[in-house]
Image 1: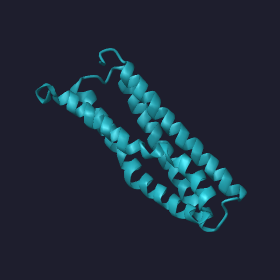
Image 2: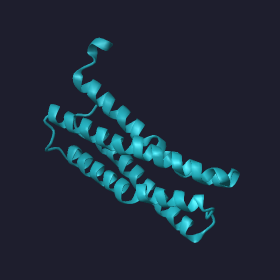
Image 3: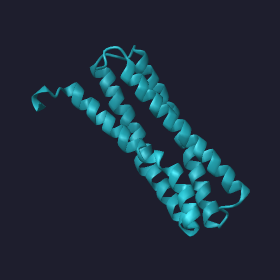
Image 4: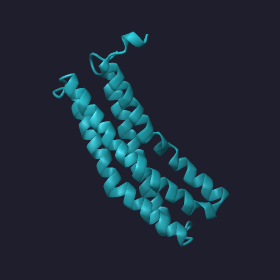
Length: 156
């Protein structure tokens, strides 16, 4: 079985693993915040700091790693002209832009508001909705990209 492992398959495996590591946690955060808010509101600032740390140290570099591995695959397979590659490039640029322009600054503002005890405040709720929509958009782009990657001719 190991003998049938090719460079391309190994690279695809590492690429998929990078997607799981980079985006896997992101899917759980919108569920954790309301749960912790209800059960232990005093823990919310710590949770938000943890989320922001993971966002900065796992998600942000993970976006770059996923992009780089995808580019290496496109070069190796001479696939730059294919739609699925263009889609992947555009999706990663959009995800990276959402992270830098909306997600990260909104996380910082949520932390500030939570530390001030404003979990019930209008601004905190508005920022939380903004953050949740941003996370949903990023995850939708990831899911759409997975579907595009799995449906291109020549896959499987």
